[in-house]
Amino acid sequence: MKSYSLFTISLLCFAIFIVDTLAFYWLQSITQLITSEILKTTINVIFWIFTIGLIALIIILKVTLDDINPKRKHLLVSSLYGLTISSFVPKFIFVVVISILFFSNYVFSEQESLIIVPVIGLFSGFLPFFVIMYGVFRSLYRFKVHHVTIRFKNLPTSFNGLKIVQISDLHLGSFNFKYRILDKAIKIINDSKPDFIFFTGDLVNNYAWELRGWKKVFEKLEAKQGKYSVLGNHDYGDYSQWNSTEEKQDNFEKIKRFYKNIDFKLLLNQSEIIELNQQKIAIIGVENWGKPPFKQYGNLNKALNNVAAIPFKVLLSHDPSHWTEEVIQKTTISLTLSGHTHGMQAGFQYKKMKWSPIKYKYKHWAGLYHKNEQYLYVNRGLGWHGFPGRLGMRPEITVFELLKK
Image 1 (cartoon, rainbow, N blue to C red):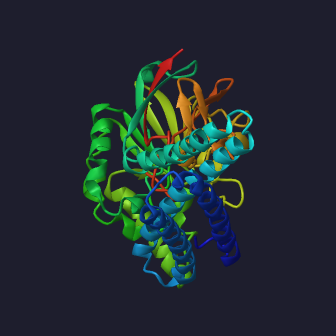
Image 2 (image 1 turned 30 degrees about the vertical axis):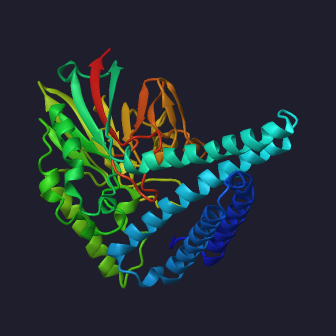
């Protein structure tokens, strides 16, 4: 909420009030079927207590946000965000559906409308509510493994069958120090017996203190040949206010140091050459590079300096928009691994079909893409940020097998 003005927050509250007023109006067509006046009054009172309470909480949190301890701030904002979404979306759908049904009353007789319209309207509101609740309480930590096989002409024969695990967007502050949540994910990764583990950014939400206690979790990760990582936009502390540039820099240095403590090599516009049987591949890592308003810390040319002659290159770059702007048809990078979008933590996926509102902001937002012989994979993220739920977009662990074509 801190990034939004009080005026914007006021508009949000006004929208909530309008939708709730309309929802209450249509709710009367349902409560009229109830014979008990006490029960009807109780429903009406509870409805408005919740609405007024929610609006008051949003405004109070916005006004007092700067004075809240950062360790509590994210939990409060995310909880209120989840409450707002789970309240607003079902009511909005309820209002739209029941309005359409009411004004299309020629479909039903007057007697049928008195029963059918309220029932369908009520169902249209409860269904999205239960879907959201499922996303918050059930699918948020239901880790999904995506197995991806890609064939390359220029993959050295010594690396045929190379197995890579990619994870991204942990946002550890969102876990509120519940370390055991990731136990299953760690087991899945280790059971895959990867040659490499790549982490593509957003370790934290903002602060180094979010990392407290997590070392004992991530030091369990095992890879035969190495573990590598890059930074995401949230890892720089750009979304927080600091008392001084030194304080911000100290926070940043602690985050970078954490990778060393868990035996991940952090690539800061750097590359690493991997040799096997006198054949070589290159692992390249850039700092965050995104379209404005995201800052562009990444320097791909610098990272490519000592690996230009190596035919097969893997790039770790947090933001998938980097692939379009600087990678394809401008470099010889074969595979780019990104994250950042989370798949918006909401969408629809069935076999090869997928959709999410995030597609209107990012052309490449989840899964595998290619342009000729250059590939991009966008991981949907293992953690969460903002909305404490995942709707049709489960947290992801990606297992790659690279084969010689």
